[in-house]
Image (cartoon, rainbow, N blue to C red):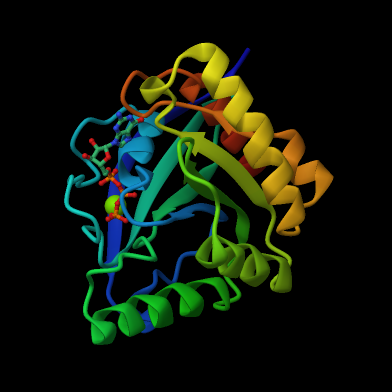
Length: 210
Ligand SMILES: Nc1nc2c(ncn2[C@@H]2O[C@H](COP(=O)(O)OP(=O)(O)OP(=O)(O)O)[C@@H](O)[C@H]2O)c(=O)[nH]1
Ligand SMILES: [Mg+2]
């Protein structure tokens, strides 16, 4: 028997931390640079096409969005949140807006909520940089498990994806990711759906068992 999502709905859109939901059943958040495909991947994982708003314009998600999910199968009876975060590192955003997002993202990580993992999403074609290091350091400081994911694999062939994954794995190790976190490095495409079933199982299993 597997574990699956029976139902997913948008529960709360928060522009500041006092708008985070009072309910705290355990959650997994999606973080990464602007435009890496956080919102698209969430739609794929939840099996929804339009629940999470997506745009080719970087800096699209500007609030913290909590999606309430009902788990079925082995995890029957469990409720949890998936949390879509605004992206960081959007060069063209005005400084004041960047500050606001940064404050919101750090308020989220330091909120004391039951964050059972953060899916750290990277574009498989790009190397992690200083801003990604900031995210990783932040998560390590708060002892939040990191689930690294390389998205947009449809842009590369299978061989090239595997080669890139090895390069990025080495770089992430250099940025301080634990071996145990790196063990579950996932290669996915939010566009084609490849790798998404395995990632969904991994996330739901975390939610149910940790
Ligand atoms: N080729 C390809 N494009 C993708 C994939 N995932 C997302 N995209 C595209 O990338 C763009 C950004 O997607 P979003 O899901 O809005 O990205 P985001 O990370 O939520 O962006 P922000 O909200 O700005 O932080 C959109 O044009 C998507 O269609 C993928 O796996 N492959
Ligand atoms: Mg988004």
